Image 1: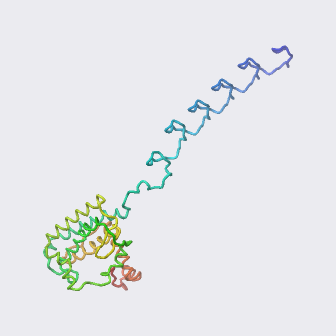
Image 2: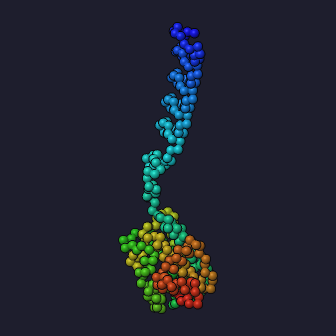
Image 3: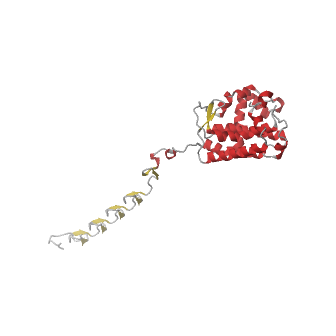
Length: 317
């Protein structure tokens, strides 16, 4: 046989087929398919898909999504959050930077919420008819009348209303613990009869129960308003001591006064001591324990709480 050019070939040539240009190809060429440009591709090319520019890409590209400019992005981009100027990487700024104008920390928020509750419970106790009926009778505290004790209890909300919005240039102690460590009355013991009689508690008691009820209720309303609208200062002065405390620590000292003197007043008039919720009671309990340990030592506290056969009388004050 002769080929197209007349030259002799083997009697059993490989079968041929005509390609696009008419030239002979192997009878068993690799199967081809036409790509976007019309050029022959491998019969088993990698599967392709068209990208945004129309160019062929791998059939298994990374999944993409369109970004703000319409350009392809990885299907699992880094999650973003909006900063002050717009989109930005989530890790581009430290957590909490957007909250720098928040004045109150978590513990402060807790005392801001619990103190009005404590003062409200104290007011309910002060208003009890048993207190009014025994107003001039001796209380459970030496030299102090029931009326004087009730006025001392009600004064805690009054003090808070007066001092929470007040500016301070006094040195600031770190904690309520420091406050009680330095307060002179803690180590002086119970005041004598003359000191009590001439003090502010008995002077207020002369004005009667109705006056105390009105003053305490008004103070409680003012305190709630100051704390709820953020008008209370971060640093609160205690002028009669000569120092200031962070607001949370100041409120803790007033809360301790309320819890302790509520028990005094309830015992004085023969009614059950009010039950305070955990948010009120727990911080006071913890502070009293720390003060008792400081004054009496760990062993005394452990014995008092766990060994009745060798327990000693201990007190935080």
